[in-house]
Length: 355
Ligand SMILES: Nc1nc2c(ncn2[C@@H]2O[C@H](COP(=O)(O)OP(=O)(O)OP(=O)(O)O)[C@@H](O)[C@H]2O)c(=O)[nH]1
Image 1 (tube, rainbow, N blue to C red):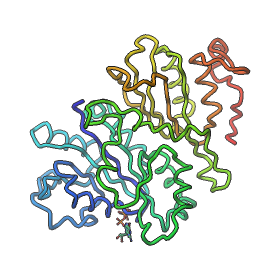
Image 2 (image 1 turned 180 degrees about the vertical axis):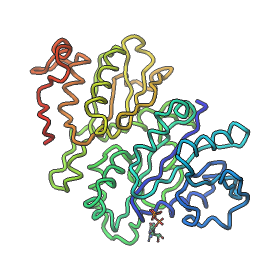
Image 3 (image 1 turned 90 degrees about the horizontal axis):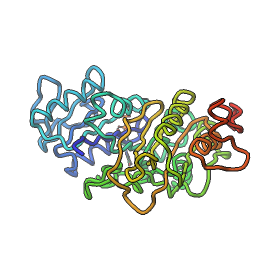
Image 4 (image 1 turned 90 degrees about the vertical axis):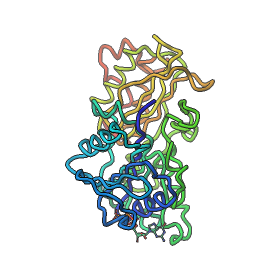
């Protein structure tokens, strides 16, 4: 893979993004990286500043390129990739979002753009959560809940000020059981290389990427908590049967067209009937999916199709029944493929009412 890994660092206002970035800069982990930040003033890099180019990209003394978003993100990423093409080493790109931002449009630029999606790969979404104000922020702001739902890793900041952090940690784990929780300041090894591709082995690390072990204990309900949290579900779809490519496309298209905005994150590996030895990787954020890619072989013994889904207002039962019917996982009282061909949305259990 010759693509450049992209890390998205997100988190609500004051959650510690800048502090974490500064720790990464000090550690030397951003040497040869490019950093896209909100404002230069924030990060206090004046002492590191070496050269400002006319494109608004500055080079820091350790070789890290630093810029703010000018125009839109696609323009900024394109300028960076042009520099890489012209010989500037760019080992990775880190994008800091503004605290109020919905991470989805940024992920779309990386995963769904016709040119950029060939040159970039999403390494991971890192979400900072403030242990002192996190609970109140999650109660008040749905965006903050969504930032956790789409995360690959969650970094808990200000735990040094918070005392007992078990409540907020439990809440984060219920919202997104697949995301590993790390305490700030997180070392580079916990922030980087959490994507499918493992640069150390030059192969796919499906287990690390999906972390679906964390979901083996059934659906995660949130009856005891806030209304925003209760909308989020994390679950895995599994099948031992190979799925034909057209059926997989139908499944994804149905979900995307009817429920796109509520597919917060979909990650998975699929056994395809036409080419069962080369699993297809699926990766989507809302209605945007990365162009499907296949792996040269199965990375380990487990050859089952596994799709990790994090949804909002979309009941796991409904998605499971649709999936089972399409792939031929026969279960009592569920429609089969023929019934779905007649009426694709005739899946019992979906009342339109989430709870
Ligand atoms: N004690 C303590 N303070 C922290 C920690 N992380 C961040 N802070 C402080 O919290 C404040 C906000 O941290 P920032 O790193 O600026 O947060 P941010 O997410 O970049 O903030 P915005 O750019 O406003 O969204 C600063 O005063 C930091 O010094 C931490 O782990 N412990």
